[in-house]
Length: 167
Image (cartoon, rainbow, N blue to C red; front, side):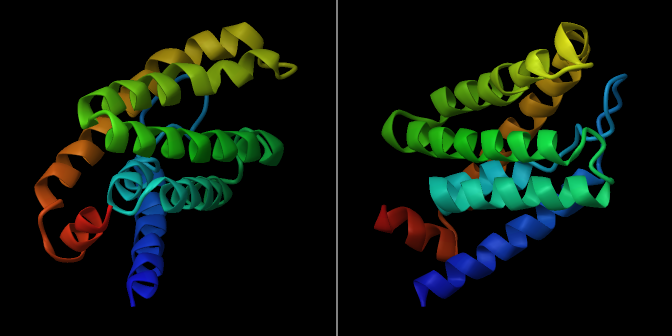
């Protein structure tokens, strides 16, 4: 039964990622900076790193697909893999150290480390990385902190409490 609830929760988080993908943060670089990672960060806290990674990967890919893959399919695949890895690290830090350190790590990984890949992509490079840094940091701050606030509010409720006690 727990596995079924986890799969249902993952589906809900993926749907929320798609909705979050429509809430854009205006920037000069791309139309794909949005609130699509908030549900993945929350899923990583509630369900664990691997389910959070799946939510991040699928949520980003579906959100990007609905937006027409503005940075191209290959770049979005790389970003989705990076997001999945970030969720595993974020969850690990939250569980093994604490939520505050996880928040800081999540913001740095998602807002600075992840977009470094843009430097190595032909026709993008350092100018696109630098132009996207501020909006990505803003998005990361909002996504990670809002996920942590929601988690702190629901961690002792129903199914979430059951999962947290099982950890």
